[in-house]
Image (cartoon, rainbow, N blue to C red; front, side, top):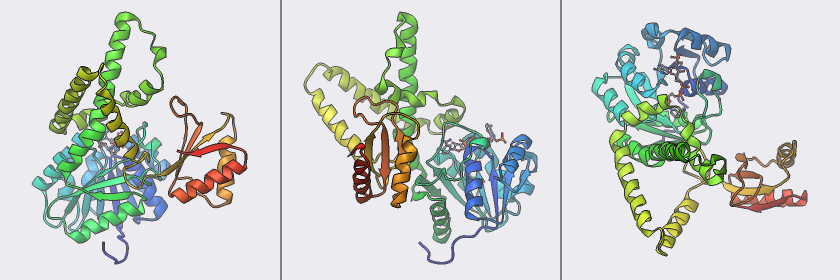
Length: 370
Ligand code: NAP
């Protein structure tokens, strides 16, 4: 990593000012990165974005060239197929020396397209900030969205190391954890940990729904486990169409592996050998950090058992803030099946988690390390 002055782009252009693009704009504004933030989107979006202070100036897509022609840093933040179609125009219009990136959830096709249409003196680094929300659009933009998130970046082969360092530095300043990867590796991993689970949830809820229609099953029996496993079945197809169609082969491979695994379980379902499947899965599951935004630096967690009533969170947070303890993650557990507890809190070190347990115990709460 270079030890020079921090990367200081002058003019940053964001193409597609939605949840991710808008969050980048707000984060840059908050951090004072870039003298001017330009948005390229539909007129209605630009108006909202300007009203929210996400961008300084806006251009419609028809004026894309004017919007990016003086930008030294450009982020393509539209759905993936639109990123693919806008890339040639953006790469042709930016000034020499510019750094162009994107935020699409698959990387191989985008990086291949950027390499194929590449322009000398313009650098392309694919990116995937692994943070999101169930909401979409600029109104849901959040300046803190990238904090603690893994930010995968996938440079094209000709990008100089110094430029890669600049990009990693920028991701760090957003509060994210940059992770350099080959685009094909990213897509294979994403197929395993994100795309397969999405399709599993879609298939499972679909199957149960069909059973329900046929046999009138009381679906209100669906308890914590079913709801935990199927939350993402509510995802909108529009974004997933682009993801599935640009990563079909790795996804098919993962589905095939999963079908094989299910077949094995089917055969062993009434045998004691199934214990080994559970033991192995238990071991792997507990080794995955619970920090929901990424897979590095696990958080140290505690479980607090309190009555579910107004003001409890504020009281707990105040008590910890008084002794300068920062809560890195907090979750109100609606579904307590399995482990109990009302509030789960995550801290960056075991020492801080243990200290918090002591403080909260002294206040009379039932609390334990998770
Ligand atoms: P979003 O909130 O819907 O924003 C996308 C923006 O792109 C829209 O506001 C829209 O603005 C513009 N757009 C241009 N062409 C479009 C089209 N054909 N259909 C829909 N919108 C279009 O979505 P997002 O969550 O920010 O996702 C943007 C990109 O980030 C996607 O490539 C996605 O794969 C990636 N990503 C998403 C997440 C996540 O969890 N949400 C996480 C990481 C990466 P105008 O209407 O003004 O054109």
